[in-house]
Length: 288
Image (tube, rainbow, N blue to C red):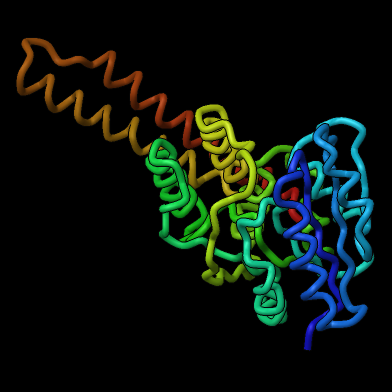
C-alpha cells in the first residue's frame, strides 16, 4: 500500500526538461489518487521555469527570491511538506520517477531508501570518476558500510528522522551526501535500490573541482561530528608507526639515532589520540 507522500523537487533554471518531469509525476499521481502532493521549490530561476510550473495543475510552487542552493530548496520543501514521508528527485529528468512506488514500498523497513545509480559511470564525465571513486572509498571506510551511491538525489525518507539532522544539512549539493553519512553513522537503517540513471536535460550545475573538494571536506567533517575516532585513531597510528620506523632506520643506517624526531612523532601521536578520545567523549555526552 502506497503511503501519503510529499514529492519534493528542487528546481533551478530547468526550462528545457521541467515539463517532461511534471507530466511524468502527474501521470504517476493519477494512479494513486490524492495520496500524494507534489512540491516544486524554484530556487531563484531566471529562465522562466517558474512560469511553466505555475501554469500546470496539481503542483505546489514555492519560490526563493534568489538562488540559495540545492540543499536549501530541499529543506524548504521538507518544512512545507504535510506528510510524514517524502521523496526527493531532480527536475532534469535523470531519475526514473516511475520507481517512486518501489522506493516507498521499501521504506516500511528503513528510515531512508536511496535510488542507487550503481557502478554505471557512463553518464559521469571521465574527469570526475577518479574523485568520485576516492570519495566513495573514504565514505565506506568512515561509515563502516558499503555505500553504492553516496549522493543520489532520488530517495525516500521519513520526515521525523530527517528533522533531527536538519540543522546540520548544508544548503548546497552536499545535502544528500550529508544526510547519507549522518544516518549511517547514527545506525539508522538505509537501503539502496538499483535504478536507471538517464542523461540529464539542460546543463549540469555541478562544478567538478570545487564541489569535489567540498565533498571531501564534508565527509571528514560529518564523520568527525558523529564518530571522531574513525579519523583520529588512524592519524595517531601513523605517527606512532612513523616514530618507530625513524628510530629503527636511524639506528641501522645513520651514524646517530634520530632521537628528537622519534620523540616528536611519538608525542604527536599521543596528543592526536588524546584529542580524539576527548572528541569522542563530547560526542557521546551530547547524544540523547
